[in-house]
Amino acid sequence: MAEADRIRWRCRRGMRELDELLLNFFEREYHRSTDSEQLAFVRLLEYSDQAMLEILMQRMVPTEPDIAHVAAKIRRAIVPSA
Figure 1 (tube, helix red, strand yellow):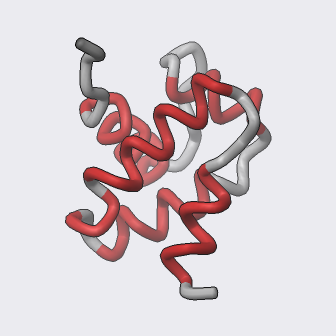
Figure 2: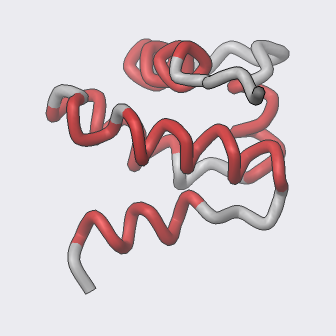
Figure 3: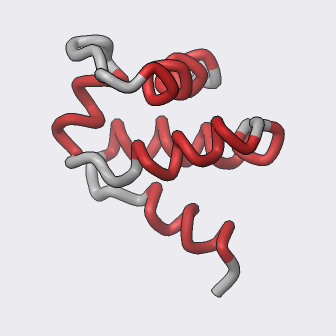
C-alpha cells in the first residue's frame, strides 16, 4: 500500500465530522501542502478522535504550533455543501 493510501485510510475515523474534515483536506490540500505541513497532518492523525475534534472545532488549542497551523488549514479547506 502506498504511503498516500495509508494516510488517506487513517483519515477515516468513524466519526462523520472528522471523516469529512480530514478527507476533504487530504483530497484537496494535502498534496499541495509543504513537507512540514504534511508531517504535522500525519502527527495530528495520531491524536485521539476526541482531542482532534476539539482542536478542529477550536475548543482546544494544541501546544504544538505546527499542529495549530495545519488545523487552521484544515478548517479553511472546508467546502460548503450545496
